[in-house]
Length: 164
Image 1 (spheres, rainbow, N blue to C red):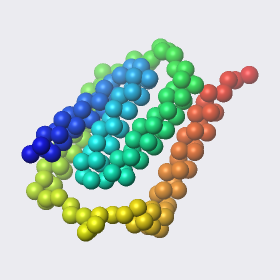
Image 2: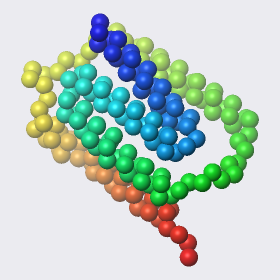
Image 3: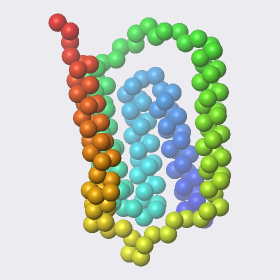
C-alpha cells in the first residue's frame, strides 16, 4: 500500500513539473522544471528495483544533459522578442488535439490496468545482459541517439555564431 501512495505522490509531482516546464515562459525555469521531472523518473526506476538505471538517470540526464541544456540556453541568450500573435482558431485546435491525445492515453492506460505486473527473471537483469543487449539488439537506436545528440550540439553552435 505504501508503494502505491509513493507512486501517486511521485506521479503527481512528475506530471505537475512537466506541465510547468511546458507552461513556463523563462527557458531557465523550464530547464529547472525538467530537472525535477527527470528526478521523478529516476525515483520510478528506483521503485521498480532498477538501481543502475536510477543512477544513470540521475548522473547522465539530470546532471550532464541538463548542464548542456542550460549552457545552450544561456549561450543563445533568448531575448523576449515580439512573439507573433497566435490566431484563436489555432489555440482552439491545439486544445482539441491535446484533449484527444489525453483521451487516447487514458484509454490505453485503463485498458492495460488489469494485465498485472511484469515479472523479472530470477536474479534480475545484470549489467552484462544490459550491455550485450545494448550493443547487439539495440545498436542502431543507440548509435542513432548519439548522432542525434551530436547534430543538436552542432546546431546549437551554428545558431549561436554571430553573423559578421
